Image 1 (cartoon, rainbow, N blue to C red):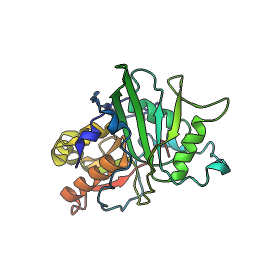
Image 2: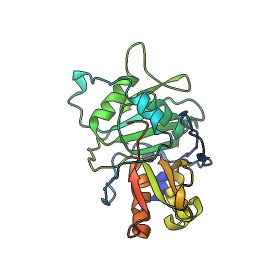
Image 3: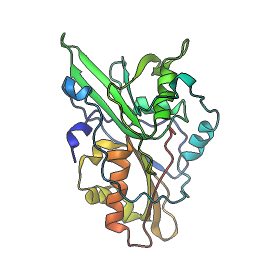
Image 4: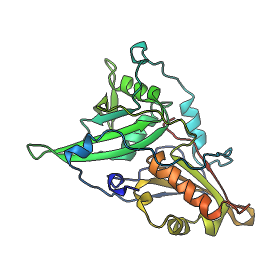
Length: 268
């Protein structure tokens, strides 16, 4: 798997939602890279191979009650002029200095429901005048989601803001298609504490590029019998949540005391 395009800036910041008692939120440090200009405007990539998409009903309390409450506050009607759009990808640019993926995803979540994120990456290049060019490219699972964010970013008198700064949103130069398989960028793992422990999962995942995809981890309380639920929020579905869930099921899928399912994406 091509990890070179997935080692862009990864910063763990809390999404601003209430944290229930007896839960631990783990953040992850910054990692950054600089791409050449061709990488910034590279267009679509092949979809990763489909893995088991079975999802179970989440029983975790974690931080989703607050997210569901906010997401149900409103819905967004797509402008008829955008109904013909079949591109799932947008670029967010004119970013404030130091912008990271967590800030971008948090800003999107403030407008939820926008949609499920298939891929999300921060791309950097050096301009002709040696200035830094930074773009966040988001590929949603459906073109409607991309249309919604484009519409938000180009509303007259409003717009899309990151940390109080208005940024710009446009469709990518090359169109990307829909990806309709079930799954989100959030995965919940349930099992004995020593199995869902962060260090053990790191061993299962082989310390791979997955760690650059982790936004945060929410650990639920240890329950009767030593069972624990741990929620992992990744920056994207494609090379984050999907891969993590698949590797977990390859290792523990035959055990009755180990389960995994996709959680609620705050942006959806």
